[in-house]
Length: 228
Image (cartoon, rainbow, N blue to C red):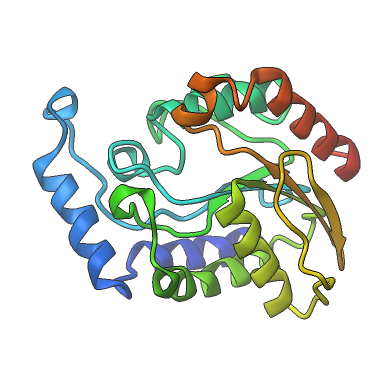
C-alpha cells in the first residue's frame, strides 16, 4: 500500500501552488532557461521525493536547483551537487550507478529515499520561513509513509532544522537544548537517528569544506546504523 500512497502524495506535491514567490520563480526559470539547456523542456514544478519505498535511510536536502531538479524533474538530478551526492550513494551501496542526469536514466536507489525540505527551486537557494512551513506538511506525510526509515541524513543546517520540526510534528520529543547541526553530528529522536552532513554544494566541495571521504563516512555510518 505504501508505494501507492507515496505516488498519491507525489501527485499532490507536483500540483502544489501554495507559495506565490516560488511558483513565479520556478516558472520564470523554466521559461527563460539557461543557454546550455535551451533545447530542453524544463520541469518547472515542485519535486516529489523518490527512491526505495522500503528505505531505511532518508536523505533530506534543501530544495531543487533552478537548473538542476527544476529542469530535470528529479531532486539532485542534473546539477553539481547531485553529481557529488549520487557518486557517494553509489560508493555506499545505496545507488546502482554513480550519476544522475535525467528522470529516465536508469538510476535506482536501494535502501535509500531522497527528498527535500522545500520542493520548489527558491531564488538564491534561500526559501523563506513561510515557504518552509507551507512545504513541511508534505515531509511529515512522506516520513509517516516511509515506515522503515530509521536514519535521516540532513544535508545542511536548513534540512537539519526541518527534520527536527518534522519529527516534532510526528510526536517526537525534541531534546533541550535543541540539538545543533554539525557535520557528523548525530542525535536519536524517537525512532530516528538524525545525522548531519555538509551540503554537497559547490561552495563546500570546491573549497574542501566537504570532501569525498567526509561524505563517505556519513553515508557508511548511516547505512550501518540502519542495517541497510
